[in-house]
Length: 413
Ligand SMILES: Nc1nc2c(c(=O)[nH]1)N[C@H]1C(S)=C(S)[C@@H](COP(=O)(O)O)O[C@H]1N2
Ligand SMILES: [Mo]
Image (tube, rainbow, N blue to C red; front, side, top):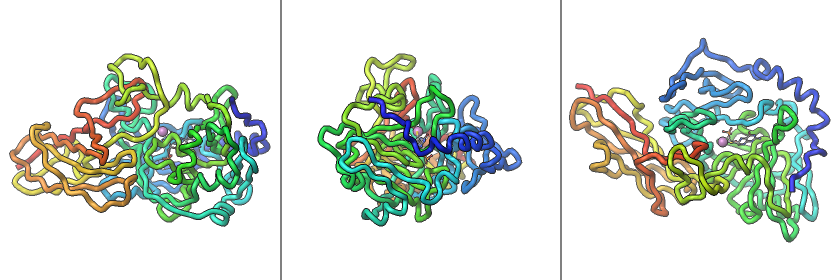
């Protein structure tokens, strides 16, 4: 069953909406800082650093809609990604919705469909009617690191800056659904943001959760991020937070929740955002999977953040290597580091635990054994015993990259 979007509250303001999106680039006040650029480590990796409202200069992938990647050095500053450095991902050219459409009582969350009592809630009603709670959780785009796949794959060519970790504060989706009274036979819960397709025929960005999953008390409808209201470009005034799951489910500017009693078959669930039906979500490079399933939880990842690829490291001195690790919600058990391409590994010390969905910092003192080029590897294992492959795994959409990312350093006398 396809849900109808006809009675959308955004309809009435659609003309104004389209007009305003045309002027988006200028209206958003994006500033290129004397055309500062960065070079991501793959062909066609030159990107401008551009400051959008509430954002420091970030790596711009596209203008319409704005898609911004976090400069990797930010992850070395701590386990919480500052709001002004947090990455931005949108699908539809008219996104984000203009600020006026998101302010005050005009912005309402509708809860409707296969429920006993449909709700229309102002954002302020949420905190009044339901308990608030918070979680520190990583948001990561399915295509984080896609630009590094070989052979190359189509889609946004990102380095590893399409992730971030924040404290998200809000109410539980389960409580809101219970207040609306989910009817027996409910199958899917559809999540829709206020951004609308720019032209007929382009499917609205709607995601679906199975009803059982939607009732998981971990899933939040968040209004705050790191103690502040959500930035405009990260979903103001309300977004979904699905800890441990790829960002595609973290609907921004959430304005409609629809419970349906049939399987939802929207474009952004099928064919988009699907992975090979295989325990490692991969196929032979260059081939197509026979069966696919929707993408769900993060696999295990770790990164070295204290030294950048290609940077010099002094010989005969101890350098503190630092980094981060995370997984789909079991938590990190161990991070090991190798300076000899896997012949030997040493265990890093894990930093403070901010919860099993957060970036886990790690550190390890390292004295380079000799002058010359060295490749450093970090590899994490989660509490389920899952780890990271040394050889990259490939799939046609470039999702779920989690290979050990080598960092080459030049040890200098
Ligand atoms: N309304 C809306 N929400 C959305 C999207 C979108 O295009 N529109 N993209 C999703 C995807 S694919 C990702 S990775 C996350 C990114 O969250 P961020 O922009 O806050 O970093 O938002 C998700 N929520
Ligand atoms: Mo994404």
